[in-house]
Length: 363
Image (cartoon, rainbow, N blue to C red; front, side, top):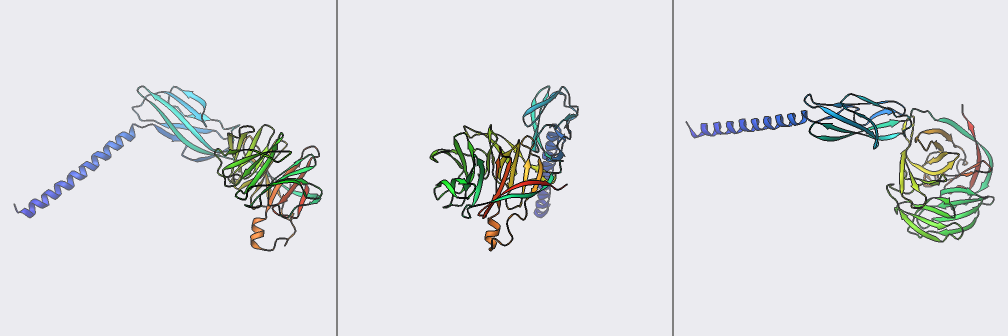
């Protein structure tokens, strides 16, 4: 046999050995995969409407004997079975958003934990409202409004932009600051709210909030954000602080420790509602500006569903801002509620007016 033939045979044998190795490895993988328990239903990130039952079914190998299967929704046990039968998980009373489904599965010889995610969406079409102007007031055109609240005849206003950020008590009739403090020039001020005798104020990118004495404006302390990406809007529901970060998520924080306690995602009937900015808590609901949009949304704090949409187009006179930069930056922002007088106030960044409005249904 010629050396060339030997070489060809040797190469052929090598190729055959390689192919056999690949087939053997693939066979081992298939056998390993076939013994693994997984989810048959639901599919990863499957979308369902809030209130719709979730069908959960395990994909179980023929040789596996399930002795126990415990199912959890967002970490809370909802049902336990002693077999692999499909179960239905109710979503009534849940909030919208991404939910984690966990199955803790036991067989005769081992215990596995499986996870998958679904998306619960809103099936509620928001009620549409317009507005009627009741009265107008002056507003300081140097105020890049980030937070706004009404307390005992005065406005608590926080303003933004590095080098221009302030916290102030404002005379509602004249729009002039009765008292103010300037933030250090490195900080971009954001939303603020009154909690007892303290004012809590956010900063934009510094990952830090500040606490002030409400009477003297003396800074008392600071606190770090927990899980939010930025500081945007802030309000107080009488029990917890509620914070936005420019996403579709709202964070509920302890009023004393400023630590996150839980969060909700915000959806309307079309999907996630992003860019949530300034917040106001009114009669059990959260009113929110959507950054750069001329409308407010009214959010159910228990579910995250947008129940109302308030169109505020036309409040600011056409042509007031001249440059494209001013038009894009100096947008609607600022919601204040007079709880006793039942008055709603809105304004915008560097707007010349504060508007008292009433809502008009568009039905």
